[in-house]
Image (cartoon, rainbow, N blue to C red; front, side, top):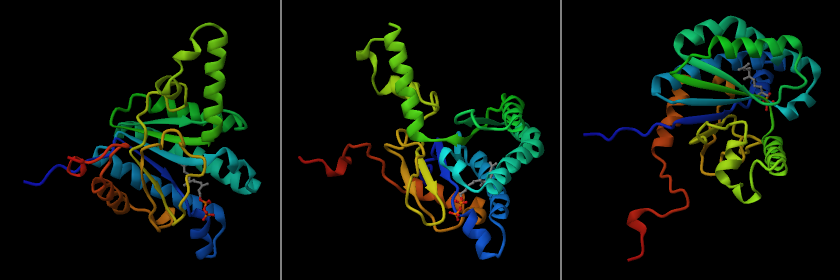
Length: 243
Ligand code: FPP
């Protein structure tokens, strides 16, 4: 009898390669992002079918505000379009969408679309889709440190109470399990300020495929690769213990 394939509870993805995909086709960068939005749909489908509980997508980093204005506007427009066109469907499919990041610098329209997608899909129980949007892992950790310091000064906690669990609970990912698997497409091997605390024991996978070409099949391949990995969390395997 074949053993059951181990399925990650949480898959986090750095969707890289949209610009190169567009360049290879003589298109504008924003056309790469539009094509990338299709890959988002494929991953949501694949994750829901496989029984993954959480998918986190690195949609827009805090550093991305430094990109050309036209490209930033195109990503914001695309987000608004996805909310307008997909929110109801996602809700029906049982997908709950959460936006993770600083709620600063966004236009009123984007802020209202953030509220719209979160409220429309709030009841979803099948899969939680977290969009890291204006997100920076280092800033997230600094905010957590500030919050804990404030609470200590206010006498709500003692400095000695601050441990890994309390720190985790002060991050934007509070209540979400750490990612079991992090995928970065396009053959780049970096985490780029994404979930640095949470990635401590994540399995990493770097397929060469550019994000707009990442298909449901590619997602399933990533799950197979994950299932074949041995996770030791700093321990040793039983057959490698000194007698
Ligand atoms: C990185 O590729 C991609 C981004 C910064 C944007 C990601 C956005 C999407 C996939 C579409 C929007 C999705 C949602 C959910 C609204 P890059 O531009 O850095 O590619 P390059 O390294 O080839 O230039």
